Length: 155
Image 1 (cartoon, rainbow, N blue to C red):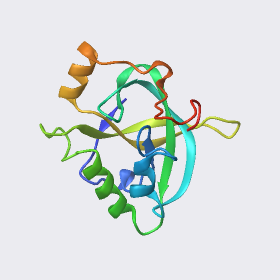
Image 2 (cartoon, one colour):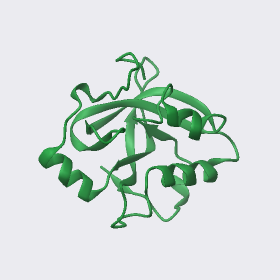
Image 3 (cartoon, helix red, strand yellow):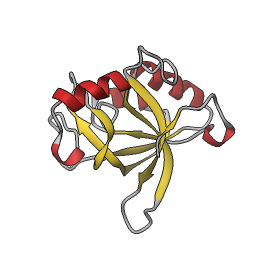
Image 4 (cartoon, rainbow, N blue to C red):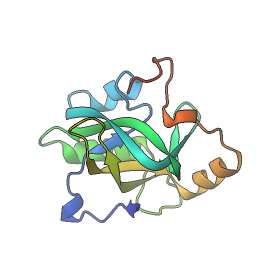
């Protein structure tokens, strides 16, 4: 169900982003990277994924669980800028690059609530080497919700 980042195909031209760590509202990277660059933010859930602790930020990987986060829509005219900023932050150098910390992939993200449904979005999942390490010795975050002093349950 995961699709690697394409070479810029038109169907994936301006997908929203699903974030689940330091880019969440209230976290430091939200203001640094997203303030004034989004027009919409709403709670969302990434199905078929697990969340692991990292060195000050979390990693999501494929798995039998759910990761809670936020779906972001880029402001008009700055999509390319935002994509570049997030790729740099997440150390994504290109699909399958051996030095990637994360892979940017397309996933279906669920939108809770009565008008819910699902939407395709960019998600940064841990790269292959990181995923292997997490599966063998990582610390799983119960409930798939990352917090750093925020009230648990806040997206």
